[in-house]
Image (cartoon, rainbow over all chains, first blue to last red; front, side):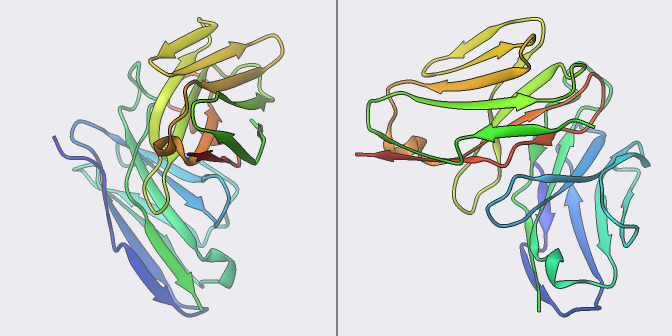
Amino acid sequence: ETGVTQSPTHLIKTRGQQVTLRCSSQSGHNTVSWYQQALGQGPQFIFQYYREEENGRGNFPPRFSGLQFPNYSSELNVNALELDDSALYLCASSLGRARGANVLTFGAGSRLTVL
Amino acid sequence: GENVEQHPSTLSVQEGDSAVIKCTYSDSASNYFPWYKQELGKRPQLIIDIRSNVGEKKDQRIAVTLNKTAKHFSLHITETQPEDSAVYFCAASNPGNTPLVFGKGTRLSVIA
């Protein structure tokens, strides 16, 4: 059984650019959630995907968008990057609408720096 | 929506002493309360969780207590060791496939 993997691990972008982050969910998990973790803060919920559909969204602007693929892997896209987008982006997978639905398994994250 | 407050933000204890971290939540419908440990540069890892149908759960040196009436829950670590040093996050969520809302974290330092 494999865990949650994310790529890239680190990246540097400049303001106004676009970025795509990728996540492979744990085997058997059909739900992927994305979180933004600013330095010294707790993870903030961006959105969740369940069976390729968005299943909830946090307080983030539309320039944050995502996709989930038939194999349950997922992408997070951020357009028009701003300095405040600099953070660790965490992907977490879970079992979806099963008893352990809320139990998240996190990836190691993608650290984005916007200059 | 749900709001989770966590205290203290930093905590230093002597090795062997106990550590207690407290969280409050706002949404009375929340029924799942996990605790995550995040070591420097690593992913958050689930260390213990509790659902609203129980008041306390233990796993070796760690325990979580839940008071649904007061809407607060706490993490207790006994006989602390240097490897317990990390940032601990509490979280809460509603029933079903709903997102976890996290507290801001507590940086625990265990001094040898």
